[in-house]
Length: 103
Image (tube, rainbow, N blue to C red; front, side):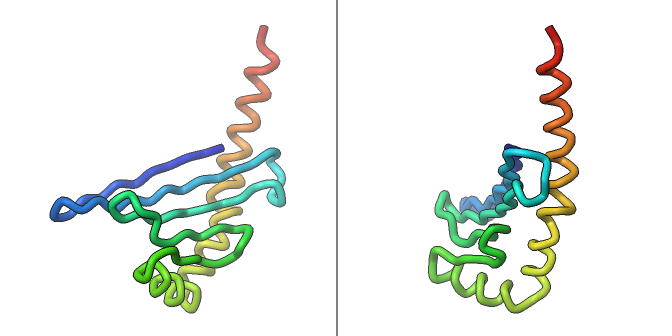
């Protein structure tokens, strides 16, 4: 699993994004890309490649999800499974296989 966090603060409030590539092989069908948006430790909205759209978990998140699902954001996020995860997962699998062969 690849895991990245982006953190921003403003006026004492914490906003961060968690981007994750879950995989059990380097095949595109075996990879799930997710990007979750948090505000003060509460997940407000998430994109999941298995769902194919943004889902909101708070009133603010639902409004954002509706907007993003009708704009270029959803198209860009769908493409990230291949453009972002596939290359990185391939590198991780190759590194794991190389290390597993060492004695």
